[in-house]
Length: 348
Image 1 (cartoon, one colour):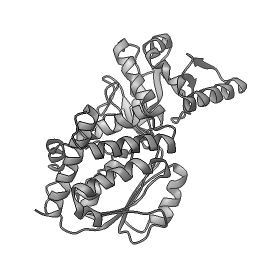
Image 2 (spheres, helix red, strand yellow):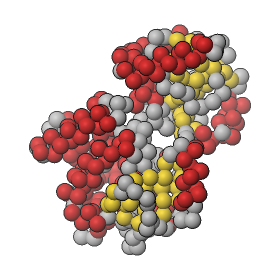
Image 3 (cartoon, one colour):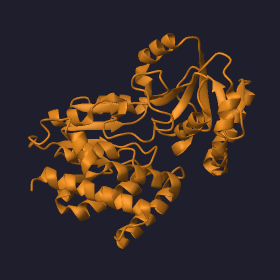
């Protein structure tokens, strides 16, 4: 059995464990206990990593890491199995949501490369568990996964994720090797006023999951003139317990105070602040909105500003739109920034 096949099977086995853990049917009791400890420690290290959000991420990956879904994903690449050369790919991870860099990690190993990983201090615990489990399943991966806290050296290519500010540093430091450098992106929703209560409630998942910290989180909505915000507020009221999370509540109170002192016009339902704003990145506990006059003009605007947008949530607006409530359920071929990571890795 070649190395690629061994790695493939290791990820399939990881997926089965995560599904069984999520369903509370796992018989790997020692690893179950280790993962439960990791989940608790992750919350201690990063207050945004609540047990609910971490388990949501683990369950999603468990559902994706099946033999069928992995095979379908890789079948898109005819030269996948003929890829014999192995390079060292540096991965600079973000830490905004649980296991946010896992797709890059999976892509590097599944294409027979070595992963040199600089983890975010905000998401060190969960990733360390995943690495330990994979090496337990397939010991040969020990030579292909290197975690580093120091300066990254000896890499042949880089995939780095950060803010617009850190991207400038990444481009300076990593620009001489093949690279994918990701910047800030946010997701938007286009509402037409004809959405059902169920669709608007599902939009709440896109807004509130991971407290809005992910690039696939909806941080802004586009609405027609005279849009009825009461319908939106009524539909998402079921998410009001989010205000009981102290870090979220502190952000809500702070941003509301700033807006009021600045005499900005806002709409507020007690746990989410709506502010009219042309920017895409809204603060935690805030949702920006912008009015549009016609859909074709809005399409042109979003096409021109595509580098700021990760997903568009809508119903019949865009060709590549995401359905309401589905932003945090990406498929394996839903690449960040629309850049095909596997194609990149197969060509280095």
